[in-house]
Image (tube, rainbow, N blue to C red):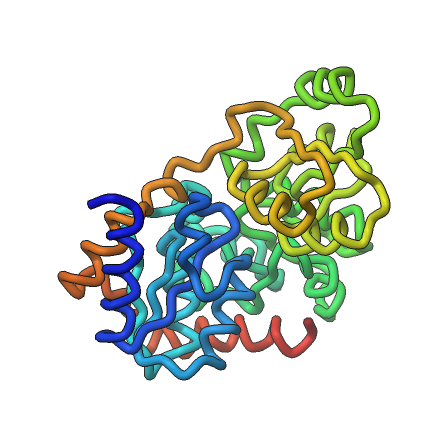
Length: 302
């Protein structure tokens, strides 16, 4: 099918399924353009809880669809591409987390939202890249196991007096950005401000004007009088940045800032998933209830 035909087919299927389509900021531009809502994983899950729809088509990766299913137990949640996972989320499993909890008895567990439902269920509270400092500082305990992203944990540690015990996981898209690449980008675009994600290495964050989540980057750029920005996160965010700020210029630190799992979703895979009613994401109720407690505790302080 041609693009227009695919879009028309998606619109018809959306009516048939009484569905809402949501897309993460890192999705392909054409996927973002057909979505009802675009945002980060938590924004989308919260939005889904407020819409009048029977089915949620989640254009993202598995842990995001799981989070939507945790918050929306009475709706059908469908992952637009069944094989779209998250290497960061896969870096820790329940057995490894339990081993860490035994190694550090008495420590609280703060779990990054970029994790499986089972990991959330084993954690005290979740956090996002936008609120990790608030979450950590809300905990009475001084010792905190922070999972699974070591770079976000290291950044959060600079915002608190708590002792953070960092699990050695990472997002490969952000972790592979190097200080030398940032310095080169600044040489090429000396007028530009550098904005990077907190999942980047500490030495990369040190070279930036700000370390921000994707939603924070969008707000920062819109409110900023500056006209040029170097962006240190997945390249899909540039689509929204340019739509929201057509008079401003955006550059990537490097051309390698691509999450292959995020890019697995296409208009074709969305049509196939909707036509076949496949890739339904479910979370066992016992796991869902425990995971929801961790998510709800985060929402209560956000």
